[in-house]
Length: 433
Image 1 (cartoon, one colour):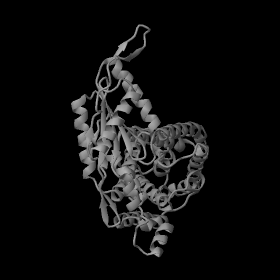
Image 2 (cartoon, one colour):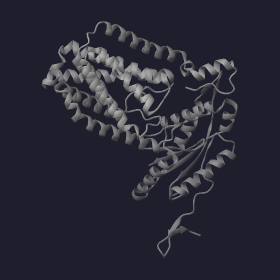
Image 3 (cartoon, helix red, strand yellow):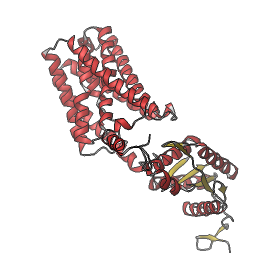
Image 4 (cartoon, one colour):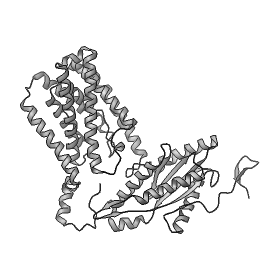
C-alpha cells in the first residue's frame, strides 16, 4: 500500500483531504471492509445493549477486568512500543469478560484498552485502533454467545468440571480464529498479491495464541471464584507481558524497519556464526550481494514512497525464494546481502539467477503506471574467493561492480579467486606469494 507520490496530478485539495483522513487514501475494497466491520460492531453494541439487563456484579467484574488491563498497559508503557511490535497479552482480560459476562461486555471490553493504547503508549492511525477494537469485540461477542448458549450459567466454569472448561477452551479458540481471520482479510485486501501465510499463523504466532488462550481461560476460572483473586493473577500476567514486549523489542532492534529483513549488524552476527560453523565442519558456503539497478531513478521519477515500496517488494521476493536457513539482510540503501550455507558454486549461481529473474518479474503500482526494476548481483564462495566474512564481502562486492560495469541485470563472480593460504612458521596464515 503506497500513498500518492509527489508526481500525482490529483487536485491539491484531494491530496490534503487524504492527508488529514488516511482512511480516504486506502483502496476502495479495503475502505468498504473496514467501515463494514466497524459499522457491524456498532450495530451489535446497540442491538445487544437494548436486550441486556445490567447487574451490579457484572459491572464490578467488568470494571475489575478493565482495571487489570489498564495496569498491564501502564506497567509496560515505559518500555515503549515501536511500530511493528503488536503482540500483547490483553486477551487475558478480554476472554474472561466474554466467558463470564453477557456478550455486551465482550463488545465493550476492547474499547477502553484500545483508547489507552492510543493515548498512553503509541498513537497510530486512528482507523486502525477503531478497527482493532471492532474486530476484537465481534470475535469476543461470538465466543461469548457460543459459551453462554452451550453452558448457560458461567458460574459452572469455576466449578472445575471438565465439560465447562473444555467448552471455554473451544470458545477461546473460536475467538482467536475469528479475530485472526478478520485482521488477515484486511491485510490481504490491502495487499492482494501477498501470501495468506504471511498474514495468518506461523509457528511463533501459533505459540503466542496458545499462551494467550490458556491464560485467558485460567484468569476466567480464577475470576469466577472470587474477584479479589485477580490481585494474585495480575502480577504474573504483567511479568509475562513485559517479557513478551521485551523480546519483541529485541527482535525489532535486529530488524530493518522498512523491509523486515535483518539489519546490517544483526546479519553480520548471523553470518559470522554460519562461517565459523562451515569452517569447523568443512561445508561449503556462498555469499551474494544484490543491488537494485538505477534505484535513484525510481525515487527521482516516482517519489520516495514508491521507492520504499520497491524495497519492500524486493525484500519479500528475496525472502520467498530462499531456504529457511539462508541468512538474508538489508545492507543499506538499495543493497541486500544473502548468505547461503551448504551452497557450492553451481547452487549459488542458480539461486542468484532465480532471485534476479523473480525480481525482474515483479511490478509496483505508482499512480497510473507499474514500476519494475532489475538487480545485479555478485557471488563469492568460501575457500575459493575468501576465507572469512570480510574477504567474502570484498570479493562479492568486486563481482557486483563487475556486473554493473558489464551492463547490469546480471550475475557475476570475482574476476580471479583469492590466492590460497598457507600456515607460516609463526602460526599465522597468509597468501602464498
